[in-house]
Image 1 (cartoon, rainbow, N blue to C red):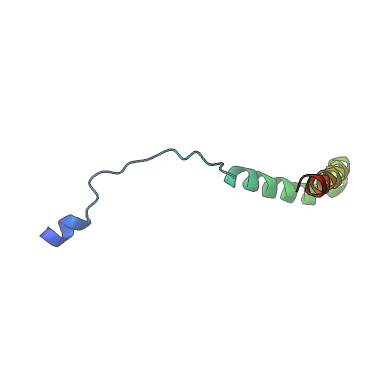
Image 2: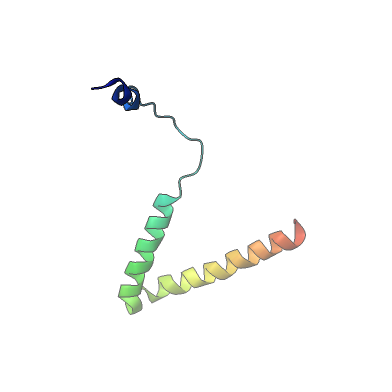
Length: 70
């Protein structure tokens, strides 16, 4: 191993914990759930309707928050 190659070798790897939110798991779960719900259609119709209702509620809450707070 030449002197130039020794400079490229990493001698110590240090891992640090980040204090940020990791959303990869949530995104993967949401995609998987959506895929499964779309294949089961009629069997999970109540869950789909509930999800659509919750979507409307969350959108209304965000609009109220933006209107009164921001």
